[in-house]
Image (tube, rainbow over all chains, first blue to last red; front, side, top):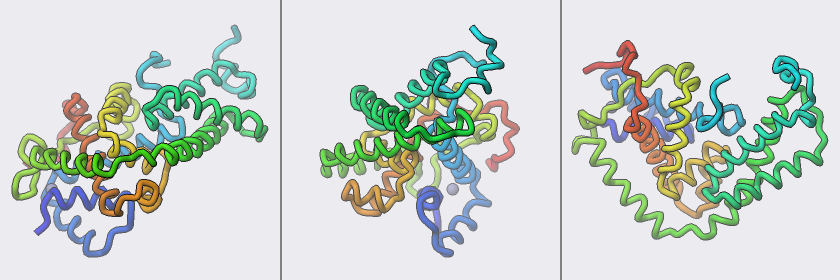
Length: 68
Length: 210
Ligand SMILES: [Zn+2]
C-alpha cells in the first residue's frame, strides 16, 4: 500500500524519467485522498519553473534592486 | 541621461551599458550558486562573456541575447564542474545520504505518511509566487543551504539541464543515488521555503482535506 514517502519520491522521479504505468497508478490512487502530496506535487513543479527562469537569466534579481 | 522608455528598444545590446552590467551581475549570481566559489564564478563569467563577444551573432533583442549568453555560461559551468567533480568524496556522499535519513523521520510517520506538522500546505499560485521578491530571496537562501553533493546534483539537473544518466556518469554514482539526491534536494527545498515562512496565509485553502 502506497504511502506519502513513496509517492513523493515517485513524483520527484517523474520530473527526471518517464514513470511506468504501475507507478502512475500508485500516484493516481493516492493523490485524491492526500492534500499533502497534492501540495507537494505543485510545490516541486514550482521549483522547476523557478529554476528554469534562473537558468535563462529571466528571474528577477532577488537580493538587490527595488521593483521598477 | 536618455529617457527610460527609449532605452528599452532603441539601443543595440552592445552599446547598452546598463543592460551589460545587469547581465554580468545576473551571470555572476548564477555561476556562484553553482560553483560556490567567487573566484571560479568570476572566471567562468569572464570566459563566457569573452566568447559571446567574439561570436558577433545577430539578435532580435536583449532577451534573446541574454538567453544565448546564459547558454554559453551553462557550457562553461558544465566544464568547470567536470574538472571539479573529480574531488567528490564518495564516502562523504554516502554519509550525506545517510544523514538525510533523519529528515525522513522528521517529515514522515513510521507508516510513511506525512507527520501532522509537516504535511505540505498550499503555497501561492505560481503566477503569484514567481512575482514575489520574498520567494526569490528565500529560494536562493535555501539553495545555498543544500548539502554539497545534494546541491550539486540538483544544480546539474535543473540549472545546467543535464539528464540524470549524464549526472550519474559524471559523478560516478549509481542511478538510484542520483535520483535519491534529487528527491532529497526537492524535499529539502520545499521544506526550507516553508520553514523560512513562505506560505500563503491568505490562500482560500482550496487544497486542504483535513
Ligand atoms: Zn500522501
